[in-house]
Image (tube, rainbow, N blue to C red; front, side, top):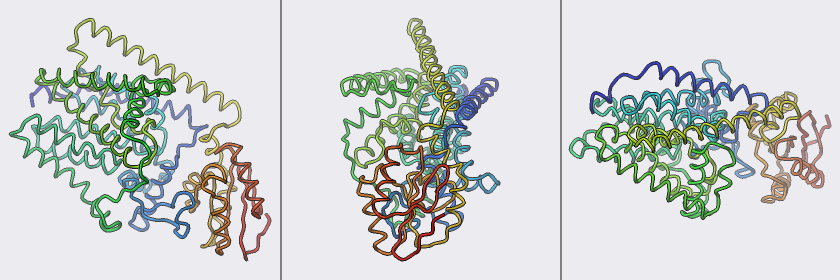
Length: 520
């Protein structure tokens, strides 16, 4: 590596990037904290893993929906454990884990632009990298994801640091640290396993002669983090990689189109734009354009001895992440790749490539690039204005929407006291806002899915009563929509469930064979 790549970080731009990233995250929190509950169902799973590892040494969650009715909690392999471990560590400082989870995510995203300035020091102008970091941070999916207790921010942070350390290959310790951060990214989010292929592949392409020692150093660093996870998986599940999910119902081509739409929507930066390009014809054209741009950039990087190496690494990371996501979505059934969350951890690589290749472009292309940046910034400004208008309307009127309804349930102290005060080991509890109640009270509440007839849930609950277990169903308002709430209440009453408790945001129904039902 040349000395240029190791030149000191421009402290002024680093500080500016840090201040700008922090301002964006704090601004979004200020705008949304009174109307949006920052805990999603996945967030609750992370919280339960953090709580259980402190008490049992195992990462366990309450089974979702009405499955596994005999188990209160069970070990999970769906969510990697690093984020819950950090939540547990922060909660030991006296910060409630419900607060710690979204706070950790926001801090990680606030650091994204500054970390990018550090990672690419010597490869691109700090000013351009700062702009790239801010474009990535203000993409609609990133801006939304950073607000919640999710692991995307930690994964992005680990990936950036891993790439930044890998670019400093003249220091063996930096390669080991790159491996540690790459392994940490995988132990944070499953798709980050792609970096364990991307960086070793890049090391081989950069220098066949030096590759064995460098790949070994990187692999040792990665194993320092991944090996404990493998050991835990073997001890608990009997296999190194126990991840399992139903078979996918979507094919490779369909998943490529969905991922293309998500990437394009994130790059353009205005919510809803992805819905206009969901047609297979348009998304196919965009896929070809993106692949063509990537191949052109890769070929152009071969003639650039210094900054070309960074471009190749970034493209390999992005390509590996995309390939793994498409392969996983084609094998397992989970949230479709149209969900922008899947793009969030590596979106910064695309803007970083633009920041590096920008200076060498011809003047006409450079003017076009500047115009594109202005348009992207304008789209993000319009998106932010729309968010602000929506939040202002929500604050001035009644709370609306599932996230606002969840916030109201989270503030329902009467309901929470009622749940915490119950001590019936055999009681089976279900709710349409189970993730909120699990997060706020730690109770083993199961999630009701949509309306009663879906998956014949009302029959499953009645069957539990017939088997001798008392069943309690909590229907909260404003979380899943009035239609399903009303449908649930009518279905419960028709099946003999009796109302035993009410609060401003909920009504509780109960049914049992032998236990008396006491009206409150």
